Amino acid sequence: MAFPPPRLLSLQPTSCAPRAVSARHHGGRTAPELSGPTPRVVVVTSGKGGVGKTTTTANLAASLARLSLPVVAVDADAGLRNLDLLLGLENRVHLTAADVLAGDCRLDQALVRHRALQDLQLLCLSKPRSKLPLAFGSKTLTWVADALRRSANPPAFILIDCPAGVDAGFVTAIAPAEEAVLVTTPDITALRDADRVAGLLECDGIKDIKIIVNRVRPDLVKGEDMMSALDVQEMLGLPLLGVVPEDAEVIRSTNRGVPLVLNDPPTPAGLALEQATWRLVERDAMTAVMVEEQERPKKKGGFLSFFSR
Image (cartoon, rainbow, N blue to C red; front, side):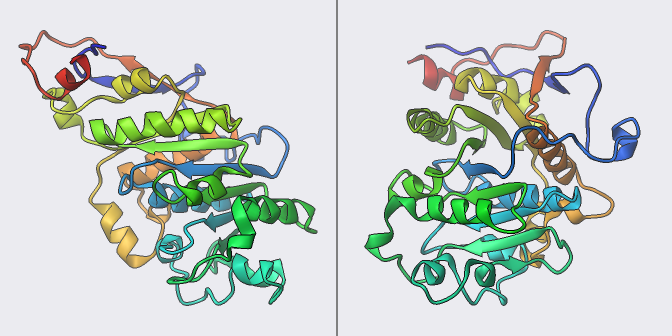
């Protein structure tokens, strides 16, 4: 199957009015309209590791909390958790979901509240270098989600940071989810894995799947050395939740344990993630619109020729 060469894009929401994350970009609006019953259980997944899935989860959770929407962020990686590091909570995780399921503590005792974002709580599936007992099975997070629904103050969102791969950890993470955010980068290896994961999500009954294209470099897109967001969207055939540009501030934010969306002034990647959060809340999507441009010499071969073989 052949695909067109990369194209320059302008990115617009599906509705007529432009949307962003603050009142100055929202025509005076200060909060999005929450769509659907709560709590909404959303799994953030990718298939391939290293595409920015955990960074996306941390920033979506922080953005939701800034909008006064209570959120529980769940790190579903049983052996290699990192979400606590990105949220700056690594020294405060003493109890986990494994302890709750073993009867050693209550669920509310395992939830770690963020000091700066009172509407954000973290729940880790287990401690590093530990394994869940086999008896827990794939329904571990289903039980956790049900318990959060029945709690005195249920959250508006439960965000599940899915481990890489499609093994037992993946099955456990997607079990309670009703929606999915599929994070990918515009390269052929990530896209192959994302396409496979999208099929598995649909087989599991998750139909509301949107994609975030991460680490996009407009200069490479312009030079036809990187696929555009429109190319990615057409290849995967899924609605577009957001496009996040390559941003050096992401590394600084990660090392500080402070979500990127808390930066002031906002960075390009932080602003893109906040915009994606608004669309997630409102069950909206964005449309990649092709921009008219001057004729450029066509390159022979290149990465897109991979798909036409």
